[in-house]
Length: 67
Ligand code: SF4
Ligand code: SF4
Image 1 (cartoon, protein in one colour):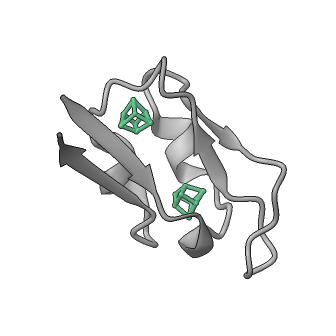
Image 2 (cartoon, helix red, strand yellow; image 1 turned 135 degrees about the vertical axis):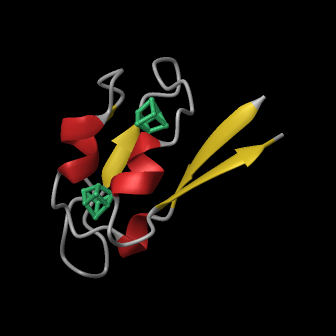
C-alpha cells in the first residue's frame, strides 16, 4: 500500500498540484499555515498515490511512502 503525506507548512498555495492531479483528489483547505496560505488537502478516497503531485510541487510538500 502506498500512502501520501502532506507537509502543510511548506505549501504556498500555488495550485500546480491541484491542476495536475488526475483524480481531482486535491483542494485548498480552510486552515491557514504559518506562511499565511491555505495549504492543500487530499481526499484519500480518491488519491491513487501516483506521485504526480510529488513531481510537480516546487516546495516539496508531498511525500509518497510505501506502508
Ligand atoms: S504545488 Fe505545492 S506549493 Fe503549490 S499548491 Fe500544491 S502543495 Fe502547495
Ligand atoms: S498522488 Fe496522484 S492521485 Fe494522489 S493527490 Fe497526488 S496527483 Fe492526485
